Image (cartoon, rainbow, N blue to C red; front, side):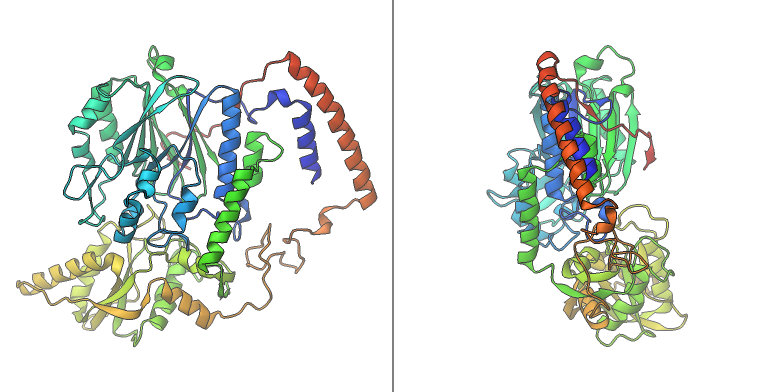
Length: 606
């Protein structure tokens, strides 16, 4: 135990009656812990990014500890997940037979639908099966504008009422997704939001036909700046009035952001890939009904997924809980059973997605210049071109040890590769690429300073003809664009674009094959139990010192005898303060709980 931990324990034990949060932002009427767009990253990022070392077990512990504090202060706390649990790591295979048991151990009050969760037929069939993931949440899986194909029956629940244990107030919750068009049409239909909110059921819920409510929570799997947010809010205002508190939880575009929508409404977005534990607090009707401007009652925080920081925000000596530890162990055991922790190679440098494509450490440059040409059989760089959507590579590839889950985190979709045609003229291909650059990639992670939505593996030389390749995810849109350009050239119907599957490989396989062939071994053994890393993947510092490995005794400049003496002194102090604290707590009621200092920056992504 470190000296810092001993001192924290001393203070905790000394004054147990003032258990609360570390700063002065109080818990409001309704309080929500938020996760969104985790994309399978339930293991966290501790292997490569030690400052983000929390996994789902730690998040569970955080929520349970915060719930205890809220209970002490008689405040209501809920836990929500705003969609896109799929497509990101080796755990998120289709169907997600390994991932869902992990998610089901999280006590979410609400789960919203995300586009990645309903884009794959196998996954959709799996989650909608009797007794499956949708039904697991007992009405808490929200699909306000997603229905089963050919029916008007929602996939989950159109709305749910949450009831405050302490406030005795009712929170009306909806769950919308943007107008996603990629769901399997034989299984699901995503209704346009503007149509869904004009439905009788939506109006009836808002006018109180199905029960009274004191505030509205809109889970919205769409960007915080999406025009649909304002459209939904306008409809709510028309039906429920200008002063009912409305809190939006947004997602999909993978940013931290907050924005005031009107005097009694706010929107909040909590990042991506478990890089953020979100928190919002907002009022109920009785608190603000007489106020013309209630913006100060809407508060939020972005909590970094760092165990030490999380512990500090709670002001507890140890955040861990038995339920959290059990979940962390379950996650590790699940990964091991899937074989995704198997070593496959060693990357020489760290390759990044969000850098210019001509940088030496650009993952896209590596992919288009080396991985694709070396893994597609018979590739001719003078005649073959690969068209890629930049939503297909999802994460950085870090230097040092590469496990199977690392390449699946880079390319999680496991999609087939197709050749569309062998004799595409350069002028046609130029127009195809130009038109594609003007389209949105549904899977793109949001606005990027460096990347357009689509990239080509090489330059188009006038007068040449090319074979054009793409992946399954983009096959339909590329085929349609190519056929359109061929029709514009000939003014005749063209149905000669017949894609041919490249046998034996997928978009995920080619990364594993490449790493095994070209980066088979690390030059030195790699330690996996690392707390700090210089960035080269091997731990320690640039001088060769083993400063990154746990147990380094250089951290403790005092001798063992002195350390024991100090420890005994601290323990005596703890005992003395404990007795004092017990006496004090008999005379003093517990102080109000509080929350992390807000970082309100209206309208600004942070």
